[in-house]
Length: 382
Image 1 (cartoon, rainbow, N blue to C red):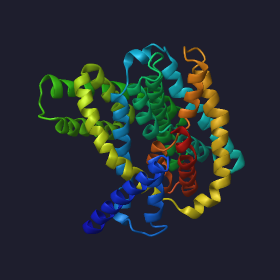
Image 2 (spheres, rainbow, N blue to C red; image 1 turned 90 degrees about the vertical axis):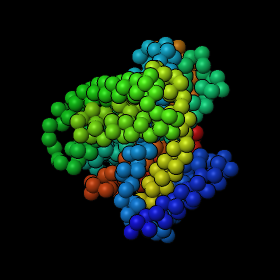
Image 3 (spheres, rainbow, N blue to C red; image 1 turned 90 degrees about the horizontal axis):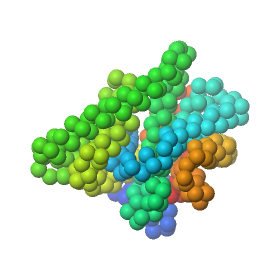
């Protein structure tokens, strides 16, 4: 069993890396190569990935999403975000909510799904991709693009908050779908508490880590800094599931607190996270590809793309322009944001298979839609 899992992990890493490099050579985002590699290696094709490794998919996806959100938090600039007033907050709430609503209405009336399942699909698909946004925005920052308006920081902050909103509401709707109708208004009312709890938890842990790792100098090198920081971030995410605050927001807030408290420490952890993400990204996208049933994706192709286009054109893009109406961004910067926010990958890979694993109705079709969203939008957004 252990031998099969180890062999499967080696196959995932080698195949995913080579497929990603091949796509990069062709000018295509490497995550698509990893996704395709997973489809070929999975149980619906060659079957080279062991079931034991696939059973760890949820835990691996959680770890990968924690890494990228911590990385996003470490890349934020408070001054640039505050200069745009409430725009980052609006970008984190309005576009994703409008897109989720359009998708839910379309799924209910075009597919005949129950409202709960329709909203479940909406909140899975509406989230932006940190795997695309974070590296791109950090690269723009390093090259000086958008420095005057703080556009990269605004996109990072809005995207991170949007993912938190999508993941938080997804968890509430998933609970409703799994347990049946209940105190729905009470569950929705818990969202502000979840967000506030996540902010406080991340702030406290970030301050504590800065004290221990930088002021006291408890560690000897950057690798040890990373181990402690990543362990703390994972603990925050897991604690969020137990206590009820937003664990993913807490992980991002922890990173943001560290960069505000000590740029030197943040730079050390960020450099090490880049190395970890090389492996985490491969596992994330290869394993989500392995769970895809190609025949279901083929059947869902036409209607899936139609739903995706409706959500983007009637929800996402109008939501971005509404959110930035009172900002100082130029028309070209708003247009750039409208395209950049289209990319979907990381969150869809992290939560797209959860309804299927829990036996939620239409779970396999929901996963197919999530994969289609990645294939269609990731290259455009990148």
